[in-house]
Image 1 (cartoon, rainbow, N blue to C red):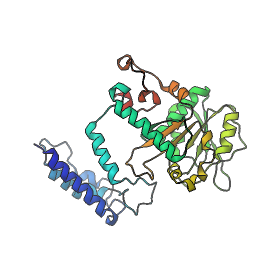
Image 2 (cartoon, rainbow, N blue to C red):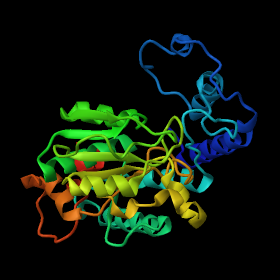
Image 3 (cartoon, one colour):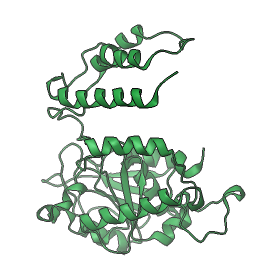
Image 4 (tube, rainbow, N blue to C red):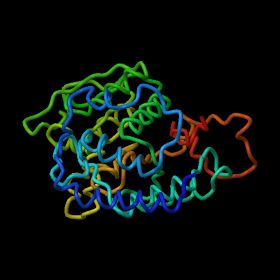
Length: 319
C-alpha cells in the first residue's frame, strides 16, 4: 500500500535534488541506442514495487539516459526550461485531472484558460479582441490555423519561407494542401515579392526561424496576403515570448495585422512542455471551422466550448 503523502514528499525531494544538481550533470545522455531498453524488463512486472525502488530506478536507469533540457548548459534545438512554481502547478493540475470538453465539464478550466491567455496577450502587447487558447505545440497551433484559413478562403495552397519550421510542411501534408516555399533575402527573411498569392489560402510568416532566428517582414507580407484574400498566420513560437520586454518588440512589427499567431510559453516563459498559445483576430470564423458538438455534449449553457477552438487534445475531444 502506497502512502500518497510520504511518497509525494519523496518525489518532491527527488525533483528538488535534480534541479540542484542538473547544472553539474552531462547535458547529453551518456548511453548508446538500446542500452536503456536492455536494462528494462521485457514485460510488465507481476508485483508492485515500492516508490523508493522507483526513485532508485530514476537515479540508476533513467537519469543516465536523459538529455538534460533543464541544464543551464543546454543550447541545442530550443529552450524549454521550466521553473519550480510551474512544476508544482503541474502537480496540482494532475491532481484535479480536469477534462474541459465543454464549459459544464469544467467551468474552472475553461474560464481560467481563456483569461490567462488574455493576460499573456496583454503582456505581449497584442491587440484587444483577439481570442486565445492553449494547444500542445506550435505544430498543432499552425495546423489549426491552416484549417481555419482553408475554411475561410476555400483554397488549398500554403506559402512560407524556405526557412520556416518543418511543421508547416508537415501540417500541409497532413491536410493535403500544396506547399510553396519562398526564397529569402540577404538577411534570411522571406521575400515579399516575386510570387503570386491569388490562389493561396495561408501565408505563414516566421518571427524567429529555427535555424537563424531571422524575422520575416510581417507587415509587408500581411498587406500582400490580405490584398490577395489570403490568411496571414505568424509563427512566433520561438521569439514571440521576447515581446514581454517592450524594448524587444521591434520584431512584432506588423503582427497586429495577422489573422492568427502562435507563441510557445514553454520557450522562455518558464513553463513545462507542452504549452503553446494561439490567438486569432477572427474568432467567429475560426470557431466556424471547428464547431462540431455531438449530441452527448450539447447543453443549455451559453458558454464558450474549448472543443470549438480547434484544440484536438483529449481535454477538448473527450477521447
